[in-house]
Length: 465
Image (cartoon, rainbow, N blue to C red; front, side, top):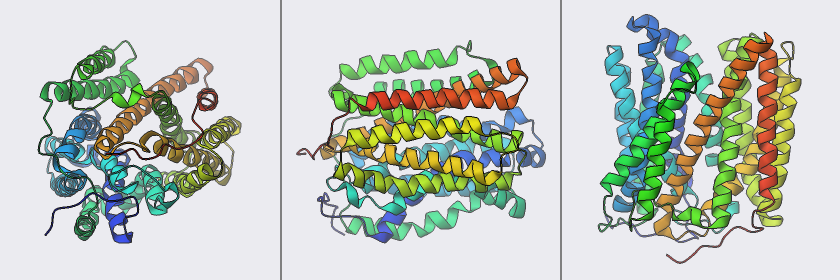
């Protein structure tokens, strides 16, 4: 078998290749939320307290944060596709191990390994899908299947989890990963033969101190933010994590080949685009936290109804994402992102009109409007961030985007959860707390609209490698 060559802009993943490239990210994103539904069953069947079982969720998130620190180096050293294939294989094996776990301790360990394996898959797949490891030239050819899968996956975790657990038990949420992972292997071979991805670079050096500092910072921030939601913001872990991340920034500035190259943010337009990606992540993930509270705790719908109500929002995101890139071709990045942010602010604000008696279809419709707005906004932002990058910078760009998205989403959920709890207690009404939280999120979207005025008009063109 000949070694892979670098894909040209004209080469695009065929259907089979596209499916394998979205399989890994979808599995890792679904497993972020699917275990939340299983926690009561795990507490009962494993006969362990909630505080212990909760680490099956927290350990996965912590490991994913830590695993991002190694993603850029692995992609440079071994190539995008081989690293992706290894991550997918390890994720599938650890899913089997989770399903066979006989105790809480074993499950927590295997979930942490699963998180480490899943961490690289989203940034690697993005790099492979939107240019075969290079930068995007023709944004209109972004696979719609990928957009649908990426955006629908978080909501699908809740829906699929409730259904699988009610019929087959909690082990089924891990066993379902096996056929998907195994069926994806032919796609890996097809992608290899198509020459998808970047060349491995044997000269890539391991920045071990920087990687350790970055991993420690990401892991400590993730742990600290989770602790802040339950113990308050006086907890010292999240500030310590931010200090470690600041230390990594200083370290990376003095290194020729850091674990994660931050040179991307020295470009004004890309730095602004990254900040807008962070704002949209806050609005997206905070509502994914708040919407189930409204549907389940305030409107008193079942878990199955909650999952079904959330799923169309993800589908709306996926369907509107390709439309966003087409509109960029017709108008400009600035106009499309500005319009998307304004629409997002309106639809998020509309959530303040929902009540305990609002029909579920109305709630779903409002959430779909938000989903469409996020899809219109997110896709042009990602392409504006990564478009025009030399191929050897793509791994760093993808990983940096994933790091910022994860940090922004974690802080957004924690801050809005705190605001919701505080205002609910102060007013004696969970609905009032919900309304005030979504109005704050609407303000964040308006801030994003103002910042969008500073974006460039056009997507960057590909630079020479």
